[in-house]
Image (cartoon, rainbow, N blue to C red; front, side):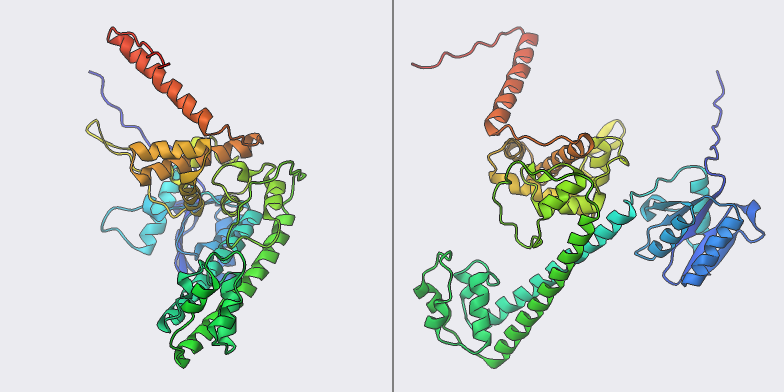
Length: 443
């Protein structure tokens, strides 16, 4: 009987270092033969970070692994990259040490060992210009969330005075809602005068609106209403500044000539930027992602600001979907599949694609039919993830091949699905010794 030979780990990165990131200081480990003191602590001040980089260069380090701890890693990551070092940003959950061996010194040494044997994979980080675009896009999303809180404060103040405006118009910060609320803040209390401010697009009649504006006008709630509207306006100004910054940054990323031959289906996207975002995105990636049903211009912006238009980092659509956390997981033990659930992730692009999948519920398109069919045989969460996975593959194909998406319609999809089911039934019937015979249509 042949003896089993224990395989030895091959040294992949002999010049690797490991860094344990902290808020106040960083612990750095290099190979033991590079310095008399192979583990050192550096403060997080800029001068100390430069000293850290100088020490790594003196130790002839060319590869560095560090944990993605909060946002503390960003200054050091950018500094080391500017010095020409290859930096691997690793997930802390993937590099856990043996239980009972937890300290800053041991953590950085463990990272250095894993990196030297090539056992770590770096997280995806787009190019600098995409990182800058991503930062402004996330800032804009944060401002929208904060602004929405003050809309809730306005609704609360009105409800406490029994002003039922929110029950007769859908949006109190729309055209009609803002006119009425601002008139209330300036001192108008006559329901008839306030009701005359309504737009012709409001379904509710003037009498109903006037009835909803009868309440108990208390000074403390009017004060809260005034402050909420003031803060809402302040965030609106900040959003306008963000839009100008986004437009400037997107203009610098234009690499394709914009030719919009067909009109996009009409869609009123709330909180969309005030400039032609769709044209800028087409100029950035060369294709119109909003041609995909369910992908609005804000969804396309979220995906491109998180990933960029360059898909070369992902070898296939499967790898792209895996990075998004939209592919089935693998959990097998004892020859049995225990679970196929997709991994939990806070990926913003994946969240945007899931929201896009939900919007296909009533779409009369091939993707809409696909989503409804999945909802019929799976629970809703799985159907949403599977549809988001399909959207991700379509986006990957468009960005890599430069081809536009063409929807063939719900009828085409349903007919293809019918033919596929019929083929499987025919094959199964033959295996059982039967033939399928179509039922003649009734005359």
